[in-house]
Image 1 (spheres, rainbow, N blue to C red):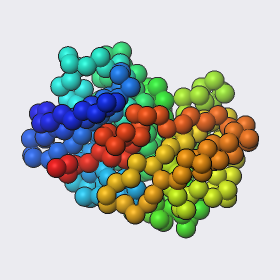
Image 2: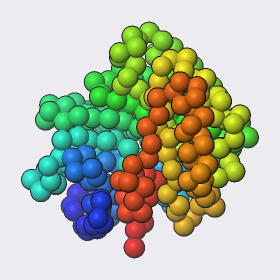
Image 3: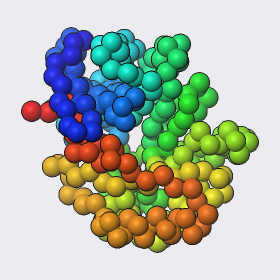
Length: 266
């Protein structure tokens, strides 16, 4: 695999790699210390709000291809952390991901993972790994909402059950490594009904919610909520005693922000 291109904004550095069989994948260096890397060429989950899966799914990345995203940049950038949160669902490529995770940890890097929690058995392996934090991407609870969000209709109730059964065994201190990711989409998942379910789950297990603003992509019909609506939902969660982290400027940058990485950049 080779480094093909670099794009730079005021906040983020985005890197395009070319695999030996001609596919393109991307990583992004943000916050001055963290490299967000990809695990697949395309994504089988097919989130309708995300650019990463809009061209379909082609294959898993090998352990070496996952590591190369770091190795090709480690002499050029002060990388202290790895976010396994780029293109692809880590659970679908769990064996290569976990081998790469061990490699990164041996390099004294902090490693976090973002996942939808499917497939279930592989999700359990991620939960039990030597990670430094896992974000479970939820984005909606009711069946009608989730059908609008995800191309792949996976059993969300099973995902929640697996997550809850694991979390409830942990002390409150250890639960701090886990959070719930929720992307607000205007008129889709921003109702009080959906947010109440989010608050209930977070409060039950003393979990932090990462409340994200949407980065619009050309292939998606969704729109971000207004700043006023975003603030309203933030205050709603805080009113219920939930710890909330907000989208920072790196995550909302059009270049390399959450949901903008693609296998088909031109």
